[in-house]
Every structure is written in C-alpha cells, then in structure tokens.
Length: 546
Image (cartoon, rainbow, N blue to C red; front, top):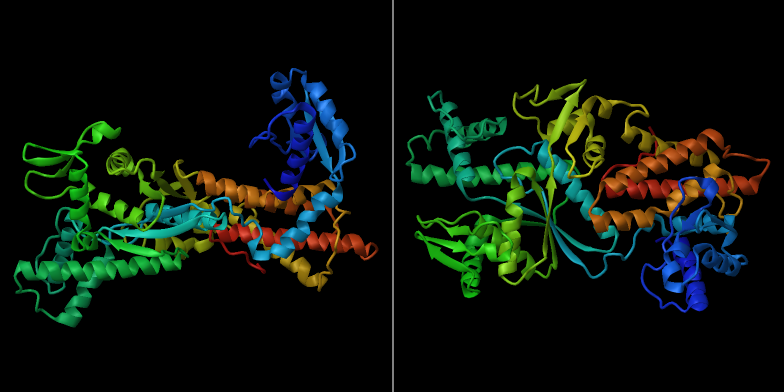
C-alpha cells in the first residue's frame, strides 16, 4: 500500500476496532481503486466481510464507518453503494500530496523495504561458453536483470550470478570444432563434428590462432591440442558473452565456474554430504540419489557405472555453494527444456536439509516475426539470430522492453516491424515520447516554482495521473514479490497513456492562473520522475529529447 492508502486503512481499522471490538490483524481492511472514477478514488468491501463476525448486516456496518469518517481530514465525501461497498472521494490536497513526495524522493521514489531481510541469489543466462547469445538467452537476460533491479529497489538483498558450464561434452565439442576450423584455415579437409559448433565466431577464433600460432598445432597430438583449444575457446567465448551482456545493459555480480567447483573440492564434498545423510544407494554399479523420498518421480543417478558424474552432481555443489554464502532464497531462470530438471534439483537440496529454498522460473520460447513472417536465421551470417544482431537492428531499449512486456511463462511473439516504428504504435516509443514531451514542456516553462500544497488538481485527467503515480511503490513491491517484471512494463504504458490523455485535454501553461500553472508543472515533474524510475527498473532509457 502507498502512504495515502496506509493512512486511510489505519483510520478505518481504528473505527472497526473501537465500534465492534474486533482484534487487529494484518489485511483486515483492503482498498481497491474503482474502475469507474465516478464511484470514488477508493472502495472497500470491509462491511460485507465483517457481517458474520459482528452479527450485523453490511449496510449497517457501513453506516457506522461512514458516520465516523465524515469529518475525517482526508476524505472529501463518502458513500455506500450496493450491498455495502464503501466509496471514498479524497480531498484534493490529499491526492496532491504525492507530488511533493515524488519530487522530494527523486530517483528513490518507489523504493521500499518490502523485501528487507531476504537475501536472494538470482542466477540467469548461464549460457554455455560455446557461441553467441541467442534470442532465448536474451529474453532471460532482460528478464533476470530487470527482476534483480526491481527486487533490489523493493529492499531485497540480491546477487546476480552467471554459472559457467565449462566442463562436459559441449566443451569437448567446442575444442574439436575449433581444431577443425583451424585445419580448414590451412586448406586441409577437416569435417566439423556432428554435434559441433558452426558459428562465425569459431572460424574467427581459428583464424586468429593461425595468425598468432602458425601451424604448430597441426602436428600436435590430440592430448595437447584438445586442452589448448578448450581453454582458449572458453576464454574468448566468455569474453564475448560478457561484452554482449554489457552492451545489453545486463550486469552480473558473480561468475561461478563448474570447473572451479571440481578443482576446489566442492563437488566431492557435496557427494560425501549426501552419503552422510543416508540418501544414496548403489545399484548396477552406479551411485543413486534416493530422490523419490523427496518428491521426485524416480531416483536419480549421481555416478554412472563407468565412474563418470552426471550433471546433477556439480549442480548440487553449485547450489550448496550459494547457500554457504548466506543466501536464503535461490532463484534460477531456466529454458523450457529444463522443466523436468526442477523437481530433482529441489529434491537434492531437501535431501541435504534445505527444503523450499529453490524457485525456478521457466523462460518460454521467443518467436521473431518481421512483416508477418517468422525470422529464424540471420541474413548476415546464415546462423540463428543472436542478441547483438537484434540489438543492432532495433536498439537496446526496444529489445529489452519487448522481452519483458509479457509474462515469462508466456511464449512471446516479438514483432520486429513494430519495434522499429517511430510512432505511438510502438509501445517503447509511446512511453519514451511521453517522457521527452514532459521534458520539452518543462524546458519551455523554465524554473518550476515549489508549491507547498497541491490542492487545485481536480480535473479528472489530473486525478488519474495523481492516482497512477501514487500506485508506483505498490506496483514495484508487487512485481518483486511475485517476480512479474511485465507489471512494470504494463505500468509505464498506463502512466504514459494517462499523461498523453491529460496533455490532450488540459492546458498546462496558463499565465492567467499562475498558482494552477505551478501545480500542474509540479505534477509533470512528478510524472517525469516516476516514468524515469520505472523505465530504469527494466533497463530502458528515458530520453529528454526525441
């Protein structure tokens, strides 16, 4: 709840506790903003909810509340509708008070302590260092980074982490792919492995090796060139990934290597911990986790009969390492192909005494569409379209906004043609233009005088804006709690729409009424700050000119 709602709820609760002898409890009184502004600024159904508890009909209960609140300093008018809904019209100065709250808070407006005391480690992207980031990674990057911003703004202690899968068969294939391209650079016949990597980055790295190392690796035995090309490939691909994320405005606080988990002994430690808990057993020469005891549909192999470890083992070590650093809540953003992996990972953690610490949000598919036609391949490279090429085409702002404009669990049709448009049809342009237009008005106005009491903003368009900016902190807290980044994208659309509607009807500059003009200019300053803060949470710029 925002400050106005908290205060009004407090007044209503005091009346209820005094009049009906009910004990105070969280969530006793809930307010809603009516869809029809004619029904008031706020509404509550508390009278109907109390009927059984106090043995009175709703309208009688509502009558008691109305009588006690009629002279309240916050309320302009109060009425009872239907079976017992209580509708409130707030005094203009009460609704207007948010303007100075916003201006005073500035870049911190909307910040809260809703998540205070919660330490969350958010792992996202974590693409294999074997090639460029594709659009699926890009959606996870935009969502994960935005969610981290939102949760931090709402008071959570958030660490952003990238898990580097730098072991396993995919890295072996990287090495073999690089070596094949290296040999091809000398005109030799060298087919790529069946599961190899075909991207232009592989050719580029191989050509660089030819330039710097010459032909020294052509005659080298496999036990020498494999580790060389592995290490080089991981290093250069990871550097490229970091550059791409930086271009996209995505930050990581921590990078954890699978290889390091092995080298540091953490993988072995996790295995020993599972054995000590008595949750493993041997069968058919393999070591198994008794994961069915913890909600999994079948037991899982940890060590195969050939002595090699399954992917589950280092993943368990990785999550234990997260907990050892003091994080009480773990969040992973995974692709849809990992959906079946969630329960076994949660079961493993519960087996080690850590139930209910891991949440996984699944990233659904992205379909790029241009002029009604699905785009699967890059026109330039002939390979799958990557993040950088997408950003080069439509820009960081549009890319990030479109990726967070729909719920993560919903498949996304990304309309490239719409994202390129410089018109109000494009939702990013629509929002950014609202901010730029406000900046233009404020530049023309010059210095905006401070107004102690904002009490003349009574036009319905002004009231709509006041209500919208007043809801921002609640929207942020709700988006953080539910991990729903798209709520911020929806919010900026609604706020921009309210501003454009206001601008089309209300004359801001009115020299004949300097007090009203000053209040309207202050309102625009508050809208500008709120828009900018909201856009920043999803990594989108708020331009002052367009």
